[in-house]
Every structure is written in C-alpha cells, then in structure tokens.
Image 1 (cartoon, one colour):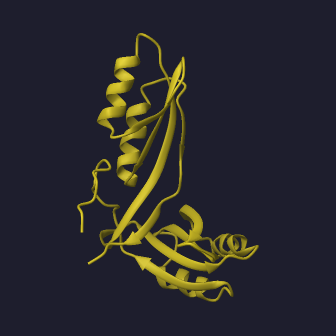
Image 2 (image 1 turned 135 degrees about the vertical axis):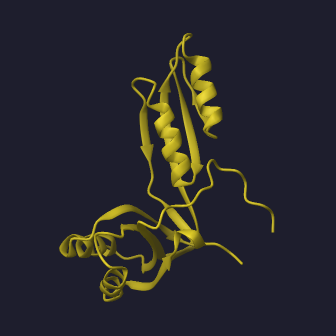
Length: 174
C-alpha cells in the first residue's frame, strides 16, 4: 500500500459532526426525499455530496455531514433507513474516515500582488488550474481543515470568487 499523498493539513474533523455514507437506488426523487426527511425532523445538514457509486449507474452514494447537536445519530439513521430507496447506511467516525473536499477559487492578480498570490497558493497546497490575464484559478482537493485554511488565507485578496463542494468520505482501510 503506497502512502497517502500530502493534501494539506491532515488533521481530522472534530467529533461535532456525524458523517453518513448512504447508498441509495439511483431513482428520481431520492435526494428530495432525503432532504425532506431532514427538513421535517429539524436536522441540520452541514454538507451534502451525491455521485454515482462505483461504476454502477443503478446506485448513488450520498455523503451527508450532519451537525451532531441537531439530532441524535440513532434517530437520523432510523429515519433514513425507513426510506424505500435507501440500500445501506454507514456511520463513518471522523477518526476512521478519509474525508476530502474540493475548493476552487478565482483570484485576481496584477503586478503588485502576483508573487503574494503565488506564495499563498503554494503554501496552501493548492494547484493552479487556469491562468488568465488578470486572474488565476486554483484548486485544492484536501481535508476540510486544509480547505478552511486556504480559504482564510485567500480572504486577504479582494474580489476572490470561491466555491467549495461538500465532503466525501470513505472508511480508512486496514
């Protein structure tokens, strides 16, 4: 097994969140039913990411990061398990999971700030994915903490356009 590549700060998420990996049938309305369940019960979704599971178009994996203070985990899992299209639910303890998030930002550059921007990007572990005459677009696929750190460091530049995906997570192997 090869070592994990460095992707920014590797500290793990504090226990204030539950990470649920939910395997669902890829059918219309499944995500709406999941979101509706959370809304009706007053559970707060901190992050949500959905994508086809493995290479099977029949199933999708929904990674839901839930605020631990908004509802007991057992209640959330029990309610999700009642939904018809839910196949499996896995609670991923943050210490036992590999979590990643994607951050993409467009940062304005000029002759005065170019070196500072490049230093910030390099120090944050991000990659430059596009260069324009007046801006650079950067990407970081890393832990939520690494994305938080890069986002904070980019705040010193004006007019930064930034977008983050929700977390995805899988259990650590071995």
